[in-house]
Length: 246
Image (cartoon, rainbow, N blue to C red; front, side):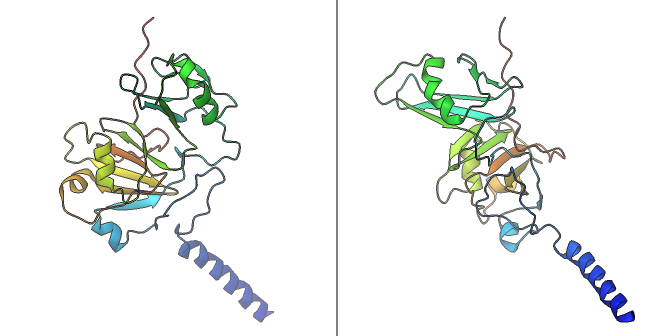
């Protein structure tokens, strides 16, 4: 009997230890979480500190990038269409899908998104935006199911999705988005990668010589005045559209 009690007590103790030791470094991926490229640790490593990181924490969503076999669009998804290749027609259309599941960027007839995918939107976009079929014209749709891009929001000049390239640094990613919109001595950059959120001082990343932090596909980057406790990677501080004139 005493031996049984001893084994039981030891098992309980080990269970208690495992819940502590596993801290959050091996978090179970949530079913709707996006795929992760280059997962980050939970604790700051020497490499992250050398890149200027001041904090890293668990992040459980909501995510901007989705992982859904059906690939259907949802309310709150950020979607972008880039029209490129023909001067005079080049433009970026960026907007969230609204609560009625319509995508309504300025200059485009409302696009129904219920039970539809990014690919569906791409096929009908030229007619919705009254864009003539022109040689060289390219329509690129980026959104929650894109896999070879990253997104930048918050206090930057050009919010949106950007095509990822090998060797891209955090400083370059901010520059691609036009840089910070204003001086922010205490500004922060937050990068969400999978179930991790890492924070960098804006001034240090942009101004100080330090080890570069490399961006991975599916990274969500936000430039903010201060860390928002209710951080939402799906929103990223991208402003809503201006109200339409009646």
